[in-house]
Length: 215
Image (cartoon, rainbow, N blue to C red; front, side, top):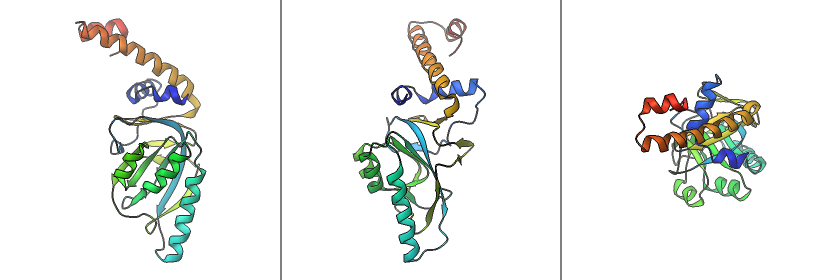
């Protein structure tokens, strides 16, 4: 399924989800890929956190150990989805990305910040993030839970939901309907290919819509 989701563009998935009545499945538009042309797909491994309550050396050591243990738990093929609950620091950096990539993780989505951007781009690891900053999160943020439902913008993300990202943004496909949505999105993409050819050959847009039932 991952290869098939990776071959589908997010707009087709969003249209199918809309048609099925799932109107809040696209993450906020501020969450964008670090690198143009990035395409990412995989089941969600959810990460939830919030502002740190302490900022001394002991709490720093505790916080970083929790994050490092979490990074080692993300399964190969999954996408780490962070609901950070904080907007002042970088929740992912180059060494974390190097570790995730080495173990076959499919990508990372951050409703938060990222740093070491040049290094991450060199790694070629898919990262979608809300902002970029050099500021370290370990003094300022703490991990609260993993593999629990999280909410990003208007979207509820359950562990195992399918996460698909490209230049248009990130779409969350609920696991319970993922098979059906994938098949319908593949059919829509094939139909849109026919429409594209017809319009290039001179067919009027309204005629194309009436013939194919979509545009």
